[in-house]
Length: 280
Image (cartoon, rainbow, N blue to C red; front, side):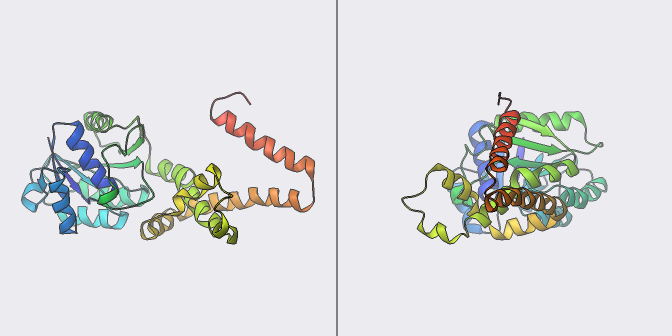
């Protein structure tokens, strides 16, 4: 199978490297930065450049761009995809992307399946991509009812071969609702947490908790601004819920209410144990 990867940043570069290492497929790459394409070829992350002519021959095209750029790429190249080809993406939101691409796919002889690899790192760009990025990660697919089971099965087998631990099937709406909590809220919290004046003096006083809480504050603000705003309704609900929960802790501390604080902490511990499937 000939696979084209559009966008050779952290995710696209890692996908290309994983395909090259773990499969016998031919992988071609495209990036707006020509130097990145050259580095990808020199490091054997790709077999060659994804040109317009090669795009017409790709059985699978994986687009690893920002949401708006992903929709634009499909719209601009819809006539160039091989009849019968599968086109998928790696965007962290799915409603807007699927709504933008599905009508285009319906009017052309290619199949679109939304996807979101649940993996990443603090740094972005091809230089930080690695073939092992997806080991034991989850992949979410959002196929609509027009997508045949054989297409989903092919994608499942490919992504498992790249190291993914599990494949989850969801609707775009379910994806965006859950991702607001499991990913986006954590980035908001980390970004807000690191702004404390105490953070500047943390050395010698911090351990694993500080590292865990601040890791994703080192984010790509351009990408995450787009993701947050396109999932504004779900994320805003989660942020407001978090503020409400934090207020309960603040109230207990302000009133020196030992029983209330104890109950809040106990509830949190028991909920974590329940979610993890452990006995409290």
